[in-house]
Length: 114
Ligand code: 5GP
Ligand code: ZN
Image (cartoon, rainbow, N blue to C red; front, side, top):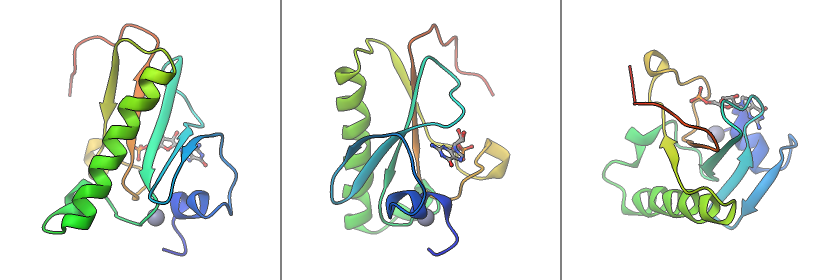
């Protein structure tokens, strides 16, 4: 998608502090970290949010690849406890409308709250 920030990062048109990349998935550090470790995992394919994986096995596999990458990188970065979050829709706090999973760790995170 031409005017999507994360598509531009995936295409290398905008720089990011990348941690991992393969044909389908990219992981990079969040520009405004909310925890000592805060990175994002995105599919390279543009999907606006998690709801767009529905009914498409390829998209479902890509989302699963993203989650596997979250877990692999968390382990690689030495996180014992961490949180994986995906905001869906503006009211849930989504500000970039390209599917992404936040991985947050390195501090006590407290109970999940609305
Ligand atoms: P959302 O609010 O949509 O769940 O998460 C979007 C995240 O993207 C935010 O945590 C924000 O800090 C991060 N972000 C926004 N613009 C950039 C950018 O240009 N580079 C990086 N690395 N992260 C960004
Ligand atoms: Zn996009």
